[in-house]
Image 1 (tube, rainbow, N blue to C red):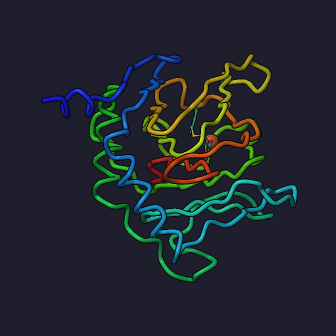
Image 2: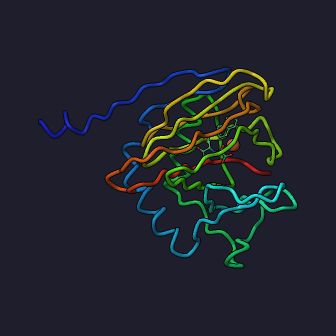
Length: 214
Ligand code: MD3
Ligand code: FE
C-alpha cells in the first residue's frame, strides 16, 4: 500500500527546557481541519488588533474560543466571557481542538488538561510579539499548549527573567509546543513574520494557545 507510505508524517519530540516540549508535526494530521474551522470562525468573530496598556495597537490580530476570551485594552490585559466587538459570548472550543490539546499535553506528561480558552493569534507579514510572560491565568500548575499553522515564525524563548538569554526556534505548520512546569513562567515572543506563502492559509500564520484561565 503506497498510500500508507505517503500518509506518514514527520514528527519528533524535543525537550526545550524544564517542562517544555516541542512536538514537531504533532498537529499535521488535524491541520486541514483546524484551518477549516478557523476560517469559519473568523467570519463571525473577526480577529482584532488589541491594545497594549501603553496605548499601542498590537500588530497581531486576536480572537478566541471558549468560556473565556483574551482581551487587551489600555486598562490592561485579561479574559472576558463575551467578545467585546460582537457583544456575543465566545463560541465553545470545538471538541476536535480540545482532543488535540489534551493529547499534546499528555505527551508532555500533563494529565487531565481541560482548557477553558483557545486564543487565536493571526500574524500577517511583519506582525510580531514582543518578549513577555503569560500571567493572566490563575493556576500556573496548568500548562499552555500552542499550535502553529500557516507560514513559519521565528519564536524566541528566554527564561524567568527578562534579561535571560533567548533561544530562537522556527515554528512551522503543524508544530505543537507544550509549556508547563518551570517554563510556564518563561519570557517569550515572536520575531516579525517574513513574507511566505502557505498552500492552505496563504500569507498568514495562525497560532492557537490553549490555556486554563480559572
Ligand atoms: C512560553 N503567543 O499569545 S505561543 C501569546 O506564537 C503568545 O502567537 C505566541 O505568546 C504565538 O501569549 C507564542 C507559545 C507560548 C505560549 C505561552 C508560553 C510560549 C510560552 C508561556 C510560557 C512560556
Ligand atoms: Fe505569550
